[in-house]
Amino acid sequence: MATAMALRVIRRKASIAARGFSSSCEAEKAAKPINLFSAINQALHIALDTDRRSVLDPLVGYFLFRCRLIINRVGSLFSAYVFGEDVRFGGVFRCTTGLADRFGRSRVFNTPLCEQGIAGFAIGLAAMLVNEAAKFRYRSGNEFNCGGLTIRTPYGAVGHGGHYHSQSPESFFCHVPGLKVVIPRSPQQAKGLLLSCIRDPNPSIFFEPKWLYRLAVEEVPEHDYMLPLSEAEVIRQGSDITLVGWGAQLSVLEQACVEAAKEGISCELIDLRTLIPWDKETVEASVRKTGKLLVSHEAPVTGGFGAEISASIAESCFLRLEAPIARICGLDTPFPLVYEQFYMPTKNKILDAIKATVNY
Image 1 (cartoon, rainbow, N blue to C red):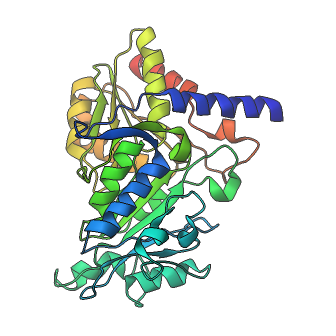
Image 2 (image 1 turned 30 degrees about the vertical axis):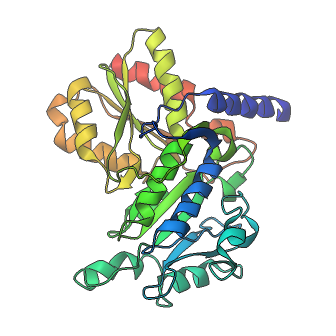
């Protein structure tokens, strides 16, 4: 069984690595192929070098919410700082490599292994993310904010993470008004979306798919650029059914689209990119065209963000729907280690759901 599971993991890694990520951004300028953690590293270098208003901080810990926090100190010579667990040494995923050498230990420094303390310090020694950071602008009537607070955190399956290090907790934070939740699907997207989060006055949580740190490689412009938040992207045009996802799941969904096309089914694929506030208009327009919707994510199906999308589309597109909305997601169990292949929303599960929905 162990050998079979290892082969499945290798095949999945190979399919992700070989996939041509259909990213879009201005690529006319100098670009070179890099992976996702290198794209994140580029964004952090740019933020520290150029952004005088916001700040960064990746924290690399060994718990579920290993936040990486970014802090802004108004009035100081430098406004961008990176601090957290092991960030001065490059971090567990190497996303902060070289920052301390270039910008100095006074701007890039380690902290004790204490997520609560780091979060409180980043917000201003006040309190935590949900009760304080998310409410700063609202409470003050937009007189003050958290200075572009951005929390970076790895998430999702990685082939060996088990019940602690493979979870997808995005829906927890989608229920907090005042936060923005952003998840990239590729290196090019990660760099542009991260810089947009850092420069946004609202606190943001930036989830980085572990699968893609080293496996996803594509041409990424070396210059400073941003991609719009709360704007979904249609990365594959279709007419029979709409598929919606985010992060690493886009690769799996695209593989299912290719297989469905062999059987004459035309799938429209949408990357949500920003979960809160999410781009309802783009999804609604697609569903009005296709009449069918499938949402897929790694998080457990119950209470996952797919449920919010399904409910919203059912309300706005009820008379245009030709079949029940399908959700292909993780199971309502702790994330298993040896049974990961049964837990994950795989290509075959999605393909079966596509056929069932189209033939309803």
